[in-house]
Length: 640
Image (cartoon, rainbow, N blue to C red):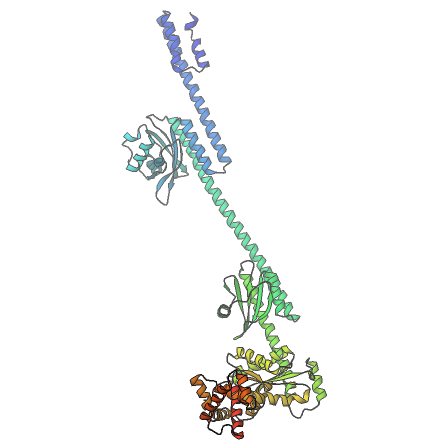
């Protein structure tokens, strides 16, 4: 038998993985050599066996490649970090292993009730990549709805599927013909579809369907693993947040306990508002401002400005109403109250947001501050009574046991031999309820004590003995500051300086006369000293409360026509009269003082004569006119 026609040639063809067409070569050569029919039949049988062996080897190679792809996919799942990358790898492997033009994956959208494109490989159409398939529509919608694999060798012509314009347009634009779709299953649920598609007609073998199902199973596992990882991460995040909350709460509780202990020790050892403010800022951080009931600073720790008064009042009212601290912008306010009495507020600018426990610390600090202020107020009232009793004894006549009075004053830090001024405040400050009078008396004690003086209520007056020499300045300061407390004008008369216990009683009476003179002159709401009013003022101070009406009638009857003429015509007759009398009746010197010609002075005085009558320059009448001019100037208002 010729070696050319030997069956061994088929083994050689198998060994070098020849194409199927090459297996016809030995038969053709045998026929050409005139080989017998029996021999040709044997060679034909050998060829068929060789082709079957070749097919088996090819299928095993493909299976090996498929298994390698599945193994790689399993490895991707084992090291899952990015679910999108894993899904892209699965779709790419499906396209490669099945040898198709395109592979893609859709996932079900439970909220919208359809399935959408998640991953594509080999796609060139943006419209196709954006498709959404209704359940039951097209091949993919049917797979997603039924959970059954479907295959078509020619989708556009396959009438088994429900075609829609949108789906067919996308498939047509992509150029797909043959499509295989298998479900992505998780237990009994279908979560999506994995596809392999070709741009030409082709069948899909059962092995290809099985391979795509295996890849779909891996994809489903990847998606579910990613979901579980996400849920695990979310759970860990929630646990971490809960742990942080517990730790923060524990820390805040510990801070609150430490702050409570510290403020308790402050009260027991006699600490002040400054110590409370320092304790709060050490625990909570930031800056704190403690204010009294009038918005004046009691203590300040750190850099913090005083809030605008309207905003402060609103926040304090809100804090009192709600019974807790309130936030306004970057500041926290806690009202300092005792019963219905407003004692002030704590204003905190923290470095960080306050939790509930931190707010309790601020509120506890406000309570401690109220206790300290009440204690201070009680001490001040007791000291005020002592100081008031001392001043009351000093103003009594005759003064008894001067040495004892000096000893009592020394224990209060008051030097009776140093210069002092006496300031008297009367009815306009004390009018009103008992609480108003108590508030005025309390203010006077605090004000005098701050300056190193004394204060007391005596003969319907509040009298203050203040160190210093300028009685007018002291009177105006008292009138101004006390007016802010009672929210209305206050009149204050003062005298002094006075030195020594024996002189204080007379100084008080002089201050009282000055106060009554201010009322008589209509200068309520002002402060002045007896020296500033002069002799005329003190004379007025000696009249009764009806003196103001008498002064008005006196002024109207004496110089009223001249004052009225000036008011109507804008002239300077009053000023001319004052200059004329001030230089002893000299026309020339009056002209120099007024910076006018002598004839102008003469003409003005002639007009005065027409208004007051021809006898206005006679001694008795001239004295009345001068007195009236002085009263007019002191009173500061025209006669009525």
